[in-house]
Amino acid sequence: MRTFLAPRAADLFLLDVERRAEDPDAASTIGMVLHVTGAVPELPDLQEYVAARLSCLPCTAHILHGDGRQAQWVHADPDPAHHVSARRVGSGPDALKAAVRDLVRDPWPAAVPAWRLVLLHGHVPDGFALLYLTHHAVQDGATAVAVVEALFGPGLPAEQSPTVLRTASAAPRPPLWQVMRSSTVLLRHAGRHRLWSSPSKPLSSRRRTLWVRVPVAWLKAAARAGDASINDVYLAALGHAIAGWASTAWPRVAEAPLPVMIPVNLRTADEVAVPGNRLFLTRVDLPGGDMSLARRLAHTRTATEALKSPEHRAVLRAALTRLPAWLLKRLVRLTTARGRFTLAASCLVMRKRLRYGDAVVNRIDPVMCCPPGAPLAVVMLVYAGEASVCFRIDEALPDAESLPARWRQALEDPAGSR
Image (cartoon, rainbow, N blue to C red):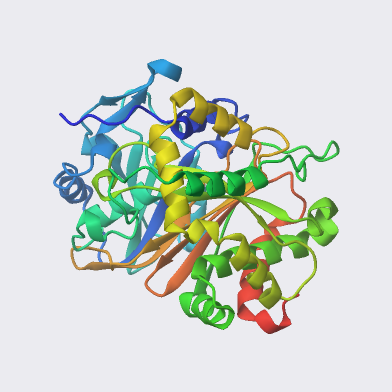
């Protein structure tokens, strides 16, 4: 039986913070909705299909047991009859969204691996949806992508997966100068900001769940024009949306630099489907204030330079795998302390077309979690020429349901966006 690294500080944090949530909306559940065109499958056939593909996915066969120093990964054989279910929903996209929001709130049984696949049907006459959910402590976003690709993709060697770090797991120790440079970058953004602390509007554990979609071509065009990455464009548009919203709804955020937590994926090829998180949560301060999207993108590109550096990522990988567990735990606590905790934004990419038999997956919507203490969390998933973004927003933020439309507007009309 394979053995894995002990649960990391991020895994334990995601369990601990969930226990402190006052509402299931703030649970640490993530996943994605696969929109499929084709005949609705029979549930036993789907369960048999999934069962045949689980052997290469150890993250679906482990439970995070215990806490603190006693925490460990315990093997538990998944039972497709338990993990794969079906639900008929009402007609129309709103009925599907309501079903997804409801299922995301369902608690995870303690004695079985924390993942489920739900066949949702009835909302469209010519297709169905497959909702894949998992607990973030057991699978991070890159792992969830790997699982869905393994279940419904054409077969992708681990070393070619877009979800892995382009380095060997036994990478050499980073040179001291790079460690010092990376440490300076991390410390520069470690201060308290208190932007989301408001005595009159305290944050809650209730969440709005909203989606917005745009053509990937919009992101690519802006990236080419600004000599930036698609992720830079996504973040710049997010900063643009929040600055515009905050000008009237949350003024303390409107002019200040916007602190955003970026999960840096550090998963290597031999860790594609192992349980636990292989990421380093790094803060980036995006430009605040009123400015054109082009100018905001230029500043964003500069702010994310370190995240694009293989040398910087090697330092983060070394920290993740070589620092003592107590020190990593302290770093996580420091990053997520009151006055420092802030919104998170991540980006996932599916490069291969997915299908179930003859039925084709034509769209994928991600599902993000937003732990208590965070004002909102956002994830963008790129698939088949479309970028779908999930906003999980604290209901305590006034008028924040406008954020998805503001984000889209920034990309649709970049010249007119200020």
